[in-house]
Length: 200
Image 1 (cartoon, helix red, strand yellow):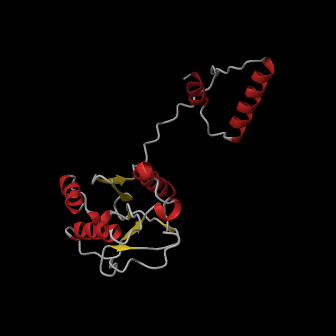
Image 2: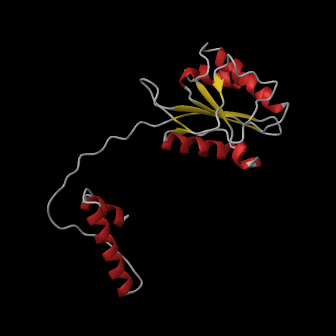
Image 3: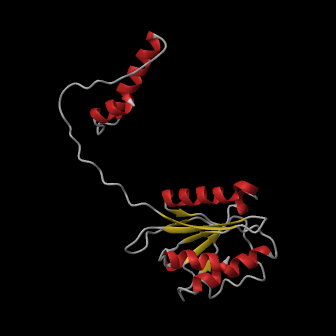
């Protein structure tokens, strides 16, 4: 585990000090969790001496072990955390495994959600670790994408062709009414965009 994590950070020039959340495999076992923690701790310490900068979490504290889907659930949780700018807490956590020493490590554990601030001069980053029963190791680093540039609006006057389809005339009238209501509620919509989207 440690070798894989170090290799990823070296090969892709990733500074672990910029990672705000590690979504660990974290099965809650007396042996497995300390092994995973030590691998993460040693790998991160190979790049930084900083302490308590990275939240440690696991979906298993909320939903249990999802078996083959555990890794993808960790990715989904991490993407949602980035989208909502919140680092989820580790619910039901009352004490740390006696073989895990958080003090002096890069990691901390909290039970309540926290606002996820954007690191100075960067974007939010997180890592997700997933381990398979056969010895498979996976460690993915996820970086929040930058906002796509907003294209300039043409805002041309004039008519636009808007395609609507329905099984009956009454259903078509209802669609027209809903679309008109939506456009009134969102006056910033560009009718060219609406037309294009509905023609797809």
